[in-house]
Length: 299
Image (cartoon, rainbow, N blue to C red; front, side, top):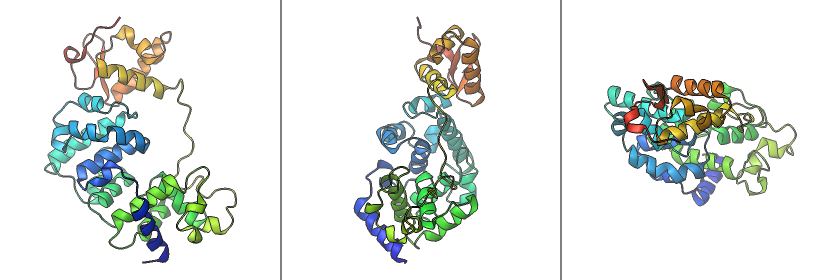
């Protein structure tokens, strides 16, 4: 084991964040956490994680309810298409894998909504495999360690090569914590870094540009949310959780009372993505839920 690996593992053991999904090796519970964590802060996920698991404790339990019920359980997390992906993945796991998540990378990647990061996270955090898990935090750490912008193919190779044999779970947790709490995007706390002496960027005196900017696995800034279609989608889904939305109320529910055409376009996008459905009476409902089960009075 390299000196850097030993130091980082020791640091991780001392400082590891106590997050609820780190207390389990259940592959389904890990998958649920990883889908929840996509583009959502850990503190928000921690507040909802156990409630979601109680509602959807197994792949079979998730697969047998309408997708709309999964979207309801997803309340407060945003990016609601992930709820649809979770439901679709549960159906595949139930029908093709006997209700047990596969421990094979190719089979995991074949599940709906499961990409390279999520598949490797399940392998590392549920099955304790020695694979590198590359999210935004890990990608930033690796680029700074190397002191250069990394291409997509090499970042995974470097991540896999860095994992000490037999320490896949602890290593990846330490790397993710390092990126989240020390090797931050803005104002990195290099004075608190346990492996600063083996960081090429720090050793070079932190020259600009930051090698993490534009590196594989490290996304750029996101488009403005306020007034966007994303904001309207979220508003509509929140309204649908309470009940069917009549066609005449779509614009108001989307936050654009004077732009019915735009509201209907956003609603059509929800239908296209499997989040919602048009009822025979023209109202919008969560997918898989009939208006009679969801309609509430609206003034």
